[in-house]
Length: 394
Image (tube, rainbow, N blue to C red; front, side, top):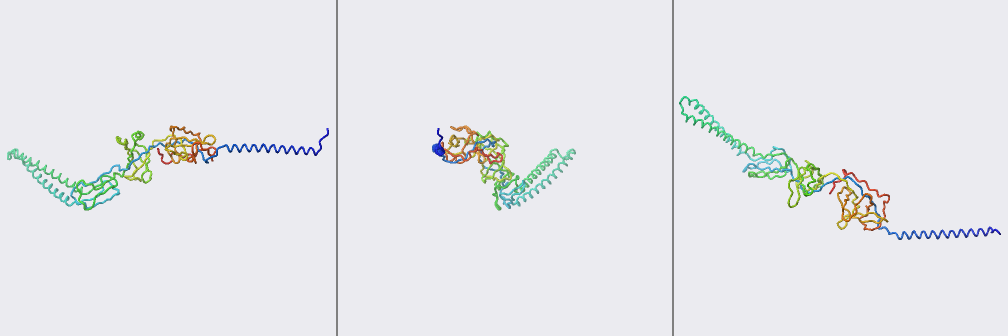
């Protein structure tokens, strides 16, 4: 057989190379065309989102209530005398006073004159008693000698007892006038702060007329209105966090629970002692949290929860990056996180293994396809400890 020439071998090699190139070009084009078809068949993502997962935390349990701040006890300081001119007022509203401190002074000239007059009457009756004592003593000496009859002796003894009685009456009248003289000074009945003043220099006060009001010991209390169904959760001595009208947080402690419940509102008053001095003032309104303890909570960032039509929803990342809308029930809030509860009607209970949409959830609808910006694990953000978190709201 005749061997092919070198020229013929080169021609065959060129044909083989050209054929192979054409085959691989055709195969590559078919592969690229298939990838394009797959990409065109896949739904287009409507939004780029970030994901998160629920995590467990130990959160404080609290009970919320509203109420007003009032004085623990407010003493009314009035005039014990009537018809006297008010000569001097020594204190004003807001002044801190001590027990026994003089608050005001009435003119006392007429009462002082009555005291002097009564002192003279006491001296007069004391002199009469001395004479009656001497006469009775002489009568008792002479009764055995027969110089005086028994009837006369009895008369002297009766006169002696009458003189003693008149002296006691005069002394009582003197003491009464001295009391009236002391009552011309208006005295603070206890330590505290003046909360009201109606006393005016130059006025003639009637007996019993109010002159001042005094917050005893400067003690305030918060009177919380608590529903009867929640009343059993509250105990004397429990700590309370109170937020007053000016935004200041005040620590308090439960002092007493009212023994009765209002039959109309079904609320009972809980009396909470507030610190002295404090940032609260009588008459302020406050919202407080009764600290009931701690309990485990399954929590999510608040941005992962969407409110629609009066219900709360989260979006779970499902197959093919499609989201599933799920109804949830919410509980306590601490900082930027919120508790998710079990048992919402028509809802699937949230578990820590579920991947949920965090940023962008408010723009999604059930079944939307999304692009995940943090697909490397959707690690949940660290939660601050309950002790460092803001006030928990139930």
